[in-house]
Image (cartoon, rainbow, N blue to C red):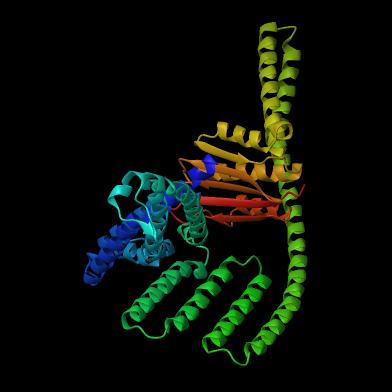
Length: 511
C-alpha cells in the first residue's frame, strides 16, 4: 500500500514538473531559433547553434532524470553533435537526429505535458480540499445543492470523500504518467526510425490544433462543428500510435482497418444516421484483412526458414571460431610452456651429478613454469565455460566479471529462476564482450548491466557512457550476434557517436 502510494506521488511529481520544464523548454527553443534565424548568414550562427544544441541536450538530460520518477530511464543524452571544421559543427547540429527528437519531447512537454500537469494538480488538489475542509470551513461558502457546510460535523463528512478522491486521483495520475512514459519518453532514447522521430511533433500538432479549434468554436458559438476536426485528428494520431506500438504486421493491418471503420461510423453518426452505409466499407476492410492474413503467414513461414538457415550457419561459424581460439591459446600458451618445462627438466637431469646447485635452479624454474601453465589452462577453461557460472549461476558470474573490471560496474539482476545452461552461457559472454569493448574501445567511466526475466525471455542490457561509435561489423559484435541468433534470440546495439553504447540481447528461455 505504502509502496503504491509512493509510486503515485512520484508520478504526480513527474507530471507536475512539466510546468517548469515546459516553460524552460519553450523559452529555450524560442530564443534559440530566433537567434539562429537572425544570425543565419553570419559566422556567429555556428557558435549559436552549438550553444543551442548544448542547451537542448542539457534540458533533455534534466527530462531524462525526471523520467526516473515515472519508472523510465531513457539513458544518457547527447549534448553535442560533433562535426569537422568551423562550418561543419553547425551543419552537424542541424543533421543530428537526436537534437530534433529532443526538440519533439520538449515541445510535447510544453503543449501537452503542461495541460496534463494542470489537470493532475487540479484533480489532486480538489480531492485534498475535502480532506482539509474542517480547518477552513468557517471562512468558505461551500454547499452542495441545499446542503450547506456550516458546522464542524458537516465538514468532517467530507474527509472520507476526500481520502477516497485522493486515492482515485493519484491512481489516475499514476496511469497517466505510465501512458506518457510509454509514448513520449522513448523518444529521448537513441533514434529508431523516421516514423518514431515524427510522432511527438505529430502529437503536439494534434493537441494544438484541437485546442485552437475548440477556442474558436467557444468564441463564435453555434453548432458543435469541431467534431469533424476532432474526428480527423484523432484518426491520424491513433493510426500513428498503433503503427508504432502494434506487436506484429498482422496486428498493424487489422488495427488500421478497425480505426478506419470507426472513422466511417463516426462520419455516419455526425451526418445524422440513416442508411448504414459503413457496412460496405466494413466488408471491404474485412476482405483486406483476410488477404493480409494469407500473405503474411506465407511470408512469415518463408522468413522463418531463411532465419533458421542463417542461424544454423552462424552457430557453425561460432563453434569453428571457438575451436580455433582454443587451439591457438593452447599452442601459444600452455603447450609452449610445457615444452620449455621438458627442456628445463632435461638440463637439470644432466647437471644433477656434476652441478647440483644449477640443477636445483632449473627445477625451481620448471616448477614456476608448471604453475604458469596451470594458470593459463584455468583461464582457458574459464573462457570456455567459467566454473562460477555452473556452480552459482549467471548473477554471480556477472558479479565476478564486474569485480575484476577496471571500470566501475553496476549490476542489476532480477532473475527469480535460473534459465537453461546454454542461455546462461550466451548471456554471460554477451556481458563479458560488452564490458571488454566498453573498457578497451569506448573508454567508458561507468558501465551498467541489467539482467531480467521478461515472460519467456531473458533480457540482457549493457550500457556505458563511453564515446560510442561502435563498429557493428566488428568481429566481436558479429560473433556475439551469431551466438545469440543461434538460440533464436536477438541482439541490438545502439551506439551514436559521443552518446555511449547500449547493447541489448533477448534470449528465449522457456522453462
